[in-house]
Every structure is written in C-alpha cells, then in structure tokens.
Image (cartoon, rainbow, N blue to C red; front, side):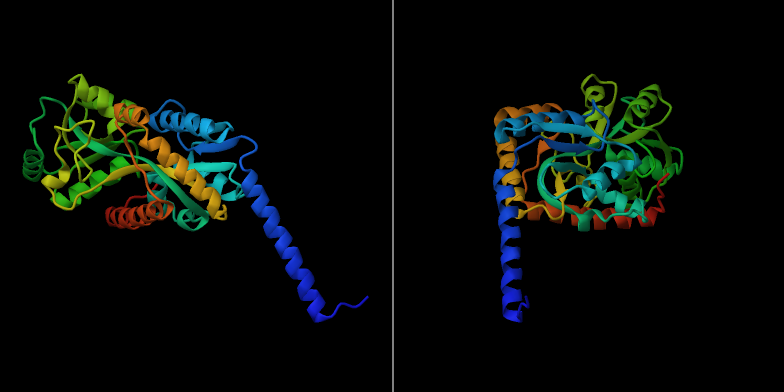
Length: 325
C-alpha cells in the first residue's frame, strides 16, 4: 500500500505525539524507584556528610531513597563523566562542586564539557576558604603578612590540598593580587597539610573552612581572613581578604546537576524541594555547624555561577601555569 505525503506526515506527527506523551507520563510518575546521587569525594568529609543530610530530606519529600554513590578519583572527573553518560531520566544526579569549574582548565582533554553536558539544577551550599597560620606566626594580619612576604620573597611556604586544588588556586590568586612570592607545598588533602602547619613545617594555608574549623576553635591555628566577599556566619569576627585586597574573592560551592536532557519540569521539582530544605531552620543550623552556608539558587542562577567561576579560574590557572598532576 502506498502512503502519500500527507498521510506520511500525519503518521509521523502521531508517532511524535505518542513519544512526547510517553515522556511526559514518565516525568509525571517520577520518581518510582531510588535516585542515585553521585558524590565525587570519599565518605566522611563535609561534601559526603551534607550530601547524606540532603539525601535524607529529599527521600522523605519524594518518597524514594536518594542513594549516595561515592565515585571519587580523577579530580572529580570520573563521577562527573558517569552522570554525563547516564540516561536523562532523573535517576542519576551529580553533586557538583567548584572543582568541576576548575577542571575545565586543569584537564584540557576531558571527554566531556561540564557546562555543555550537564544541566544546573540547584545550589546547595557555599563556604569560604580561610587563611590560617600558627598563633605565633610573625604576621598576625593580612597587611602584616603581605609586608613580610614582600620583604622576604620565597621565605613563606603555603600548603594546599594538592596541585590544582581550590586551595592552591586561590593562593595563587592571592599572590598575584598582592605582588608577593611564596613557596607552594602540595599535599594529598587537608589532614596532613594542617598537621604540618600546626607542627611548623609550613607557615600558612588557604584551607576550606570545614576542615580547619576545629583547629581554629581550639586555638591550634589562627584565622587571618576568609576568602568570601562577606564574613562567614560561622566565624563572624574574622575579616575578609577583600577588605585588604579589593576584588579578591574565592568561593567553594556545591550544587546539584543532572544530564543535560533532563526534562525541565523535573529540574524545577528538584529545585523547589532543595530550596525548601535549605530554608528549614534546623537544616540551616546543621550546615552552619559544619562551616557551610545554604546556597538557594534558581537553575539559571546556578548555571551563571558555574559559568562565571569557570571563566575566572581558567584565567588564574593559565596565568599561574598550573597543570594537573
């Protein structure tokens, strides 16, 4: 039987409508099984702890378990690529971090593009890095530190969580903006780095607030400044670097991303529920106790944050000549 052009287009439109209807039905039934939230850090740290707290809250709201999958390695790229390759059905999500923005410059040959291949869903939390030294360090303020470093180039050593880590990159920006030279000492994470700082093997470090908070609270380390534009609610008496170096800003942020083709209605449902969790006073207090602050954002605003940070850190990384190891 021959089908004329008009009949062909009618059949094609019908098939397309059925496909759209099927997709809409699947979206309306979502979720009807557990959701996997990929975390690109090992269990036990702040990223993992808050992911589990948020997962518990979302499990109650959506009526399905949010399972935390710790897929770390490759600077966070292994977990991110897994979500990029996942079906865009709402059952595989990524806890994205500021490292995903820096990786675009650190790893120029990645098989995926973070901004292009993942959809921003919601912000979850932000936190500063804190410039910490020993209590008896010769410089007790940012101006004193800069003056001492200028008079003694390459005499101060600063630790970081590794080459290309956010603690390394924001220290490089600090050195460039203040016109000083210091020696970088990379570590594999904060634990050994902070231990060496307390022991006097290095002089200072830019460290994410959650990992250094106990050291600050018990007096083993002194906080000279935080890297965010506003003071931290957790350490309200500590000034900002920007109050001494105008324009300096470094934020650690964490949010939720999904495969790019996730339907817009599912993105909006997730965004609404996440922002509702962040507005809860008890949840907010738990985050502040860990050194983090809620970061409620629309999908568009979170996408802009990712784009702006990617552009900013690419410039810093290229200027400093940082290469991932």
